[in-house]
Image 1 (tube, rainbow, N blue to C red):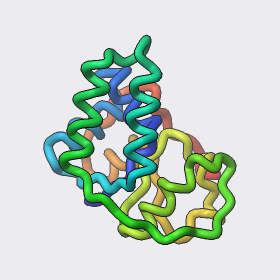
Image 2 (spheres, one colour):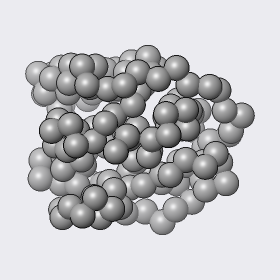
Image 3 (cartoon, rainbow, N blue to C red):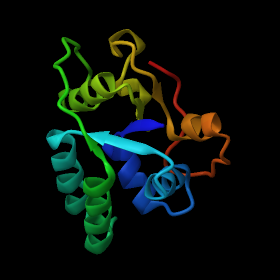
Image 4 (cartoon, rainbow, N blue to C red):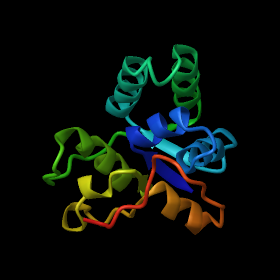
Length: 146
């Protein structure tokens, strides 16, 4: 299954071993999920994971960025005329739309239904439920769709 991972999924997955987001990252590492990215997303992953060095050890940030660069499909997305609550979320929606991927985020409210352009947006728990995996408690909580 193709997925676009919002940065918060990476942060929570690396910060909270055993949680839902950690399980999503495990599935990515095992290549059971196929991440899709563009240069903007890879740059955000790198910047955010390394900025949060009090939460995520730099070697773990380096490893996650390396894995994602190696296994992700790089997409050249078409721009979308969508307004999201946070402009930094637009690349994630554009890549998901252009690649036909599911966008996975711990912040469903950042992707209001009417602005999703037909993209399926799931929380990590919803993704795991869809895949028939057992979710565990973590910082990634299910939020009501916005």
